Image 1 (cartoon, rainbow, N blue to C red):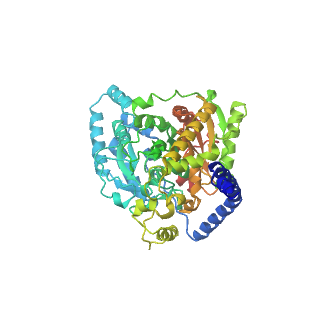
Image 2 (tube, helix red, strand yellow):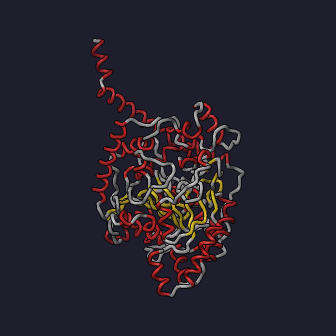
Image 3 (cartoon, rainbow, N blue to C red):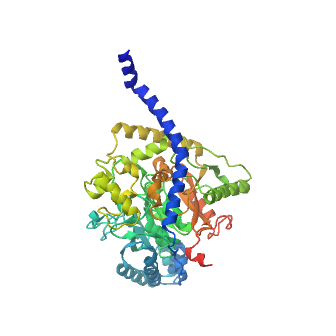
Length: 557
């Protein structure tokens, strides 16, 4: 009898059944407890910021070139309405003005940028009108200043990724995405701030400090492309190159009211990034455009991508050909619910499309949704031979790591650890990687889920999904709600393209947004949709519903 009981207890199938039952009980408990926990976190941080006045980018740019699209600026340079040097100088002046507030710059490239601008002006002066137009076709961003995230190699500059151990890591060549943008005529004026190791959505590190949200400096600008988003929204940059492995383009764009594209996996080149990754995490990594105006998305995306990859994309669909679906959000014990305003803009978007196309938009579920968080976690852990705290800081006592992390979160400067601390996913602090069997299982589930999504959406389907559950939270709040990142990382794991679309400001004057996704390689349809939903575009179907970028300096009005 005893042997029989021992067999039943040790039987893998019986253990799996016991685990599943325990997990469902635990998940039910979390489903009840987590909303209370979220309210408590928000309450504590509201108290912490009582008495701290709101600061934002209140000064409107004094030069019109700072408030127009990159496409428009390029056109004016080609037509001789403005010189390239005038454009570069205007952006340099604005960068220095707003960086005192948002702190988004890592490295400046002003002198070289001005030299390149002068050379472009001299070249254009020697060309006829016809030759200028011909040049414009091949170099769509000629003379346009851009900024680049500081985990992407830019020749001659340190690619630190906010990590002090990388302070001497000088790039010997450009990343392909940077090289492609240079070939398109863009001029790099600055490199922008990131979280340490690009491991979190709070852009802060021990080398360059904390980057602030341009709509409220008490709040985060997101990450890991946070420096890019803060400067673009401040009118100090017009387009920028970001990377996205779990939401690193989309989250900053959502917090700063910008358009941002996470491309289909494998379309944009990911060589020349730090950290270098050959594990399954690389299957989630992408490089993409960030901008204020939707008309810049497609030319920038085309410029970044290699021609051989760009030709793999499906042709774009017209708006009337698109079949819309809606996904109201993820379920589960650690899923943060949408605020009323975020839910309202999502519902408003769905209602608009239903009225516009005179047909109901079906609400769908994500295949294998219960397994997707596990897939994301395994991919992000894959390849780690030791815990993140060891990778980042050298061997540390786990208790010391946690204590110093908590002190850092509450603003203490007297810590042995760097600013990363608990801004790494709490579940990841002591990760030691994954087994081969776990990775293989995750890949199989991922492929099944991806195939199911492609079957659901087809070549003409677009899925509307909510933005981040809340507008930009106060600094460090996201540390305590680390599971929320899985809601953006799921789409990286599936390899699908996703675009963020700004939808105005909340009652607090913070950006609101929605996202849209489609089948793999259907990026161009998303880009065309974004132009229809940009209030600054001549193609916008309803500027009142879809206002596009709303600048922080409009809060003065």
